[in-house]
Length: 342
Ligand SMILES: Nc1ncnc2c1ncn2[C@@H]1O[C@H](COP(=O)(O)OP(=O)(O)O)[C@@H](O)[C@H]1O
Ligand SMILES: [Mg+2]
Image (cartoon, rainbow, N blue to C red):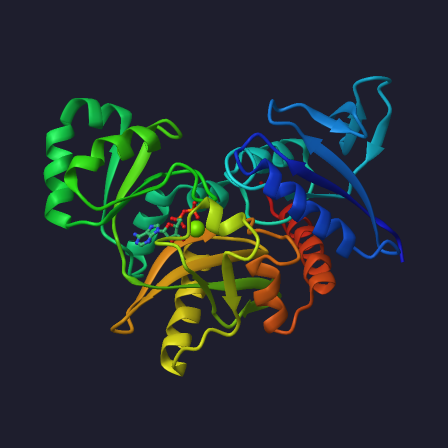
């Protein structure tokens, strides 16, 4: 069997740089060395690409994708890119566009699906169009807040507190505030607008937080839901990343009909966005048993204790099988796209 050269992209320019490094270590360790040769490239927070400390770039040479050393021009052939990057410039279609330009297969969602999933406002529009239940929200931009803050404040008051104010295109709970009173809204809006020009002011949902994994194995495998439980008021950055502050229970202790509705919602969200390979769909389950779809992640956390690999393990796909399948799915998609007439 020939060895597949996997270009592992890790780090990245987003505030999720450090999480990505842990995810990439996990993925690299799980790729069977007899089948995959991994080339690791670190993308710095300033955007510099390095391999073992030396600057590199992704390019084409003779119509083939290569990783080129900026020191000596040496070119290494690349079969597939595994972007283990979270957030802006990694999960939002930007690096996917680079891969398309260079003509290299890559793991996960394509350009448009990545961009849609990254943008919580755009995803909400698409989810609503597919009939998925989502939380009400007011979308605010820098310009609209400057022009018409009173109108926005009135719309938020009509929706009712608490609300969650969040950047449209970020992750890891960065820039998010839970606001319980009108007087605190402006500060939360300013914070979120410091991270993105577009933000959501979303009606607070009281409920349990559950996540569902989806994997393309030819047909879609939808995992059992897992429940995130924690002592904090909401799943903020510290609760997410400080050891021991949150627990993941798989499968979530839920009635069969709610489990089925969660899985159906996850499948619908994956298909509506047009994902490829994988996604993690995050939902709330309210006290009355309603399912509310919160967000979809096209490159979910991949640390060995992350939710996505644990959910897929519960669906019968262990971590090494999971990463190998994702690479295989990327190669399958590329072969299919080469066969299209365009
Ligand atoms: N509308 C909401 N109602 C209740 N909790 C929310 C709401 N929006 C966000 N949260 C809380 O904030 C966390 C992070 O929000 P989320 O939209 O998932 O952003 P991120 O992409 O940063 O994970 C959620 O896991 C949840 O605890
Ligand atoms: Mg989230």
